[in-house]
Image (tube, rainbow, N blue to C red):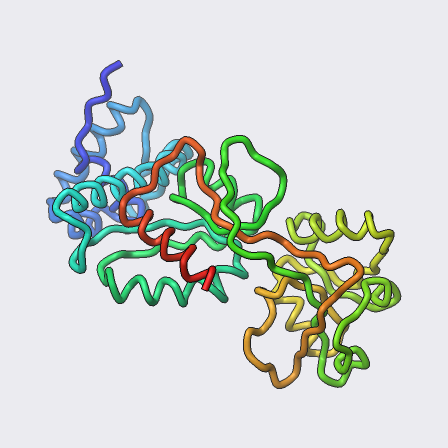
Amino acid sequence: MLINFELLDIRAFVAVAEGGSFRRAAEAVNLSQSAVTRRIKALEVTLGAPLLERSTRHVSMTAFGREIYPMAQRLIGEFENQALSISGVGYSQAGQITIACVPTAAFYFLPTVIKEFKEKYPRIRFRILDLSSSPALDSVARGEAEFGVNFVGAARDDLAFTPLTDDPFLLACRRDHPFAERTQLRWKELESQPLIGVSRASGNRVLLETALAKASVRLSWFYEVNHLSTSLGLVEKGLGISVLPRLATPQEEHPVLVTVPLVDPVICRAIGIVERRSGRLSPIAQRFRDMLIERWKS
């Protein structure tokens, strides 16, 4: 079957999906509303299914539209990057990089590298999908993100992992807690403590419990949360102590919280870059990936 559509058809669809109206989409792509409507109808005919559900007041994507949307975004971004790379990658280049990143790395490390990258390429836009480990891996595998920053979990044949650093688990407690003065703690010493941890669905929790089972350590989780940052808030209020990766703890001195290294065993998660084995990065995404590796090592 011959797939016959123009890039502007894809742009029109993405503009409507992002703007929520044909009027805003028309302004974004510099076309009339009727021209936007014609282009999206032509694209729907080519693809054989409706992309949008229209009413007098609202426009939303169909299930098929939601499936196509991330691929359409990526197609536009790759075309912009490839076209601009022909004339050279430089200060005036525009484009977008989409990254799927675990929240801890997104919060504590990515901003520093993005800031440096934006100084060199100020017109590059970033779309950061801050997702937990498994959804972030799926996002890379589906092509919604060009690459990701994640930690090692179950092996996947469709993804390649480039390690950047080891991120050890630490104890987080209040400064007035008896453990606060310790230089290190054994995991066994935490067995009777009221611990605050992430839910069983979390990749961090799975990694921890697998390693602790081998060391015959059984912890008591008094509270479960979905996000590591929430556990720090509970610790700060004196509800318990928590075990977190170093990247999830305050990177500067905190007025209330302190961290203590945990040993016997030392448990680390390996943080790195995740990419599709069959994929190829756009030139500008490749440059950001290279900078990420260089800065992380330093």
